Amino acid sequence: MTYDRLVCANCAAPVSEGRCRVCRANRERWQQEGPFGGLNPMALIALLAVLIAALALVAHQTA
Image (cartoon, rainbow, N blue to C red; front, side):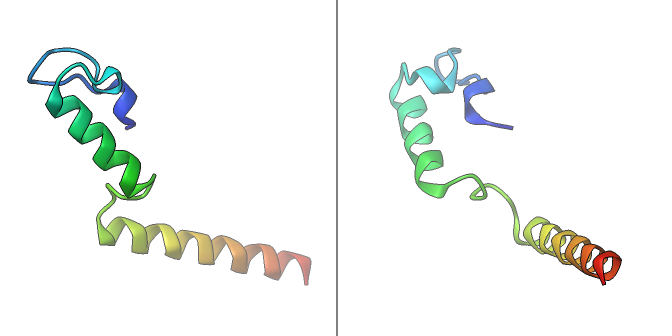
């Protein structure tokens, strides 16, 4: 989920608008972390395993 769809519990406005200081702080934190900042390490490992398996399958089919 992206932060542009989240609603702030403090001001009840979309976080992407940054109406209150809580919204602005969270928006800034998410922009610094990047797209994979919110994923836990197990999700990243699973994503890496899927990518490796897909590459192995493509390499096997082209050989």
